[in-house]
Image 1 (cartoon, rainbow, N blue to C red):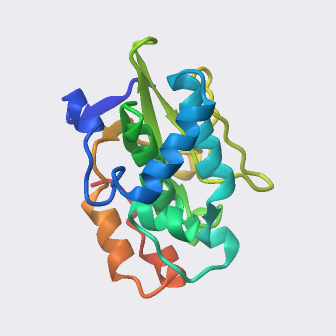
Image 2: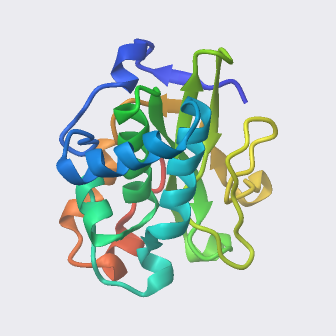
Length: 202
């Protein structure tokens, strides 16, 4: 897939924001850990990806009611849904000088069109040495869902089924979609958020 940057300015994918807050002490501590172990940026990025994928619980899978939004809160609480986990991975990567953005897919809520649709959040990463953006999905593995840190081919959590009207959006955003954040802020708990997530990027 040819990814489309929104915006095109590469500096936007390295900036700190209120939610992608990589200067927070808890984020900095984890970054220092990855930098001490990884031999290069690629190794460190893979370490960060696998940490978020495997060590940060997915709130829906976990049956949790808690909603985390910012990168730091997601790390402190060690849980979040896909959007929160993508915010955390973006913060860890940007804090190590690796451009990272946010991507979205439209998927069925429970596997069928009758269950409705919702956005799913993941990341895009850029390595200057490779001159390429590629997507990774730190959602978290479970039976039937498996993602890996892989440039080519992509190994994302959800294969998009266009015959079910699912959509793989090509856009890479420097900031989370406002509709995504609003749905998270306005939901009482994760059970409500499951149904309040926006259905599309528009």
